[in-house]
Length: 514
Image (cartoon, one colour):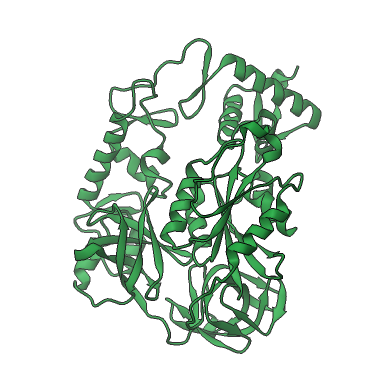
């Protein structure tokens, strides 16, 4: 049976490099990904195992800003490949990705302890208890050490894995056009089979497409089966367009719903505003708790789900999840009540108008509308987060730490009663703590010693004089630091007029040359 393997792990721990070493495919296909040295979108490859089984591999981004993309890639996978850097051990996204896998019910997989060529044997961390029951394989993508052992471990994890029989359902994660093929939609086939000539529903939009041809890993096939990465050339009716987040489904097999009854898992309070991650879409919703550990998700946009599907609930971070008990429960409130509930968190004015609602009684900030109660709750949480800063910490926080990576932050932040100093926000009357004379402040409020600053500056100057420019990825490797620390240092060099940024590279200013 075809199966899909998804990577997981913190940024810069070597997921994409390891996948390339295993498969021969660099899954960073976008020029921006290759320039910046990080994965932004999902990447795909085929992995042949010793038994002859072929896995479809989905390589996910590790950066916290792209957790949404990670969830989309992890939805529908059968096995995981958790990647942990032997130099750093488990980090923030290691644990969040593990929690997402648990909520999605992905229980089988392998842990790869990467970059062991860069660590003395006695300093290799013991992560045997990180994922109970999963094999841990030390590996180096650079030297090839452990790659055969990793393939064998993945083969063992794939043994006896089966998918339930169900009608065809594919959640679209990418749409593009090709000469001679027309529109092409790609995704993981969750269930069923898709073949040339099939007619499928496009949900929740509600129109039909005809399948012209099918490919699996760039090879034309008569049909694709559940568990495979599939590219489907389609002909939509009446010039309609398929988009990321849509489902291609067997005709009449799945409901379209604005409500889901779920068995709730996690500390999610009644009335909480969340983002529901399901398939390849993320939809704003409100949680209405019921008896017996159940809850109903009242969604702003329709989803296509089936009984037994799993959803992940997020806000600034992952809050919990649940198993779908009823994908189309009866309506317990009238349209007006649902309309009011849907604007408790920021909603774009244009979306409100499209739903036939107005902004009476709501707060408006830029293109967003929301309730007074929501704003007051947000204000209280922001001030509480700042009040909790310890005496040895900078008392401020960046916007992303207060609100998360959300589009409405620039419009709502001025309403929270905070002071902005540099790139951080402070409670009224509190200000950045002064750094000692021998420390240099970085953009997130952290500091480094002057000695470390000068050492990093010397590395940068030497590289720029030799190569002309330097990238973030190259400076990170030279300094042996994390990507975040390297980025903060480069930004400090920009402000100190050591470097001049030009897109994704930097060059020395004349005054900084030796």
